[in-house]
Image (tube, rainbow, N blue to C red; front, side):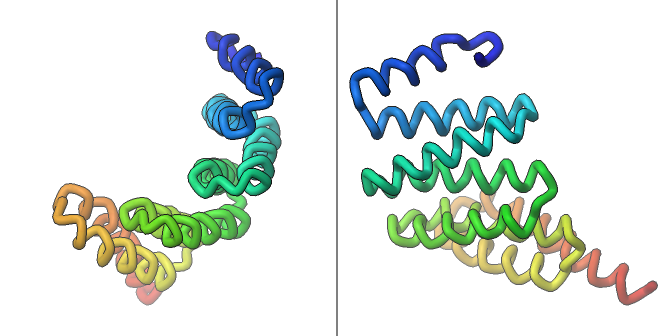
Length: 164
């Protein structure tokens, strides 16, 4: 069970009992996120995979978004950046279908972060630029800070490689 939150597991049991699949997918995603934050990555992946399966079965793009994000985050926490990016790429596609431009920008930024973590400076820059272009449309300058920072990290990594 989840420390300090037995109600979450209880709510999952209730969603199954009343056969509320969308709510079950939500509960699984929430639990997956909790276990990821507790660094129980195996449990987090299992719960998030269950959530994704249900979301796909019931054709709920919104539930798929949450599950894909959770899976991308968990694999990133594990240092499995390529696997993480596979889920983030699926997330980008789903967010485009939903016309969620800001979500798409932040998913692209997560991909950029994974490329930064693997030392792939040019891909870091490419994905950060895509994210920044979308966030500029939002007319919220504060949101542009993170892609700018990622761009600077990508450029810095690229410069440092050239100097060595």
